[in-house]
Amino acid sequence: MFVLKSGRVRLEKRVHDQTVVVGELGAGAFCGELAMINDQPRPVTATVTEDASLIKLEAGQFEEMVRKNPDISVRMLKKMGKRLNESQFRVSNYSLRSNEGRLLHQLRHEAEQAGDSDALTGSTPIPDDLAAVLSIDIGELKALLNEFIDRELIAIDADGHFEIPDPAEFDRYLSYLELKDRYDYSES
Image (tube, rainbow, N blue to C red; front, side, top):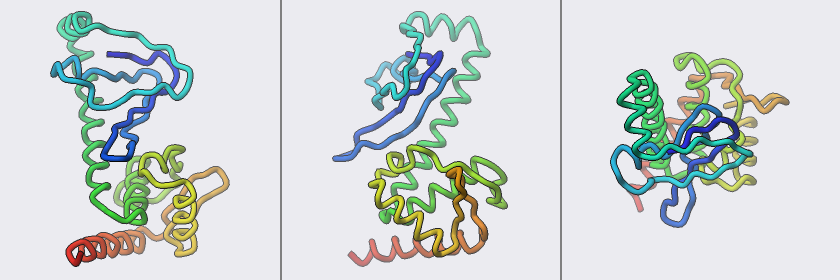
């Protein structure tokens, strides 16, 4: 297991012929814990994306640390639960076959995570790795974002933050795309 003292690490998983980003970790985060807990191969690949300083824990050290300090266990469980929720969101997002639907679904999720999930208001940063997270070509991502701006589903400021001016309209359009996706799939 590794604990990041500084730097950034990207977690990726190979799914069929694509590499999917499943997470980005910064200082204070950890990875490799699942291999320690269930004695299985690591489910994802961790790649340092920004110079990092890491602490390596062997299985015995990890078990002793967890046994002696229940606070560490609770913090780890909370972080693992958060990662599991995020993974479940990403799996549900990949069930949408259109990039347009997946992108809108992701933007809604980002807005929810940044603020009030009911109102979806406020300025939310667009993640730097959004194209990688969604496995969308950067050119297509930019084209879709411009289309959403033209449709007035989102507004993007000079700092790369987006807002959802009309959450009800945004959700209506997303619902339409989800239904269209289901209909198109059942027809094929």
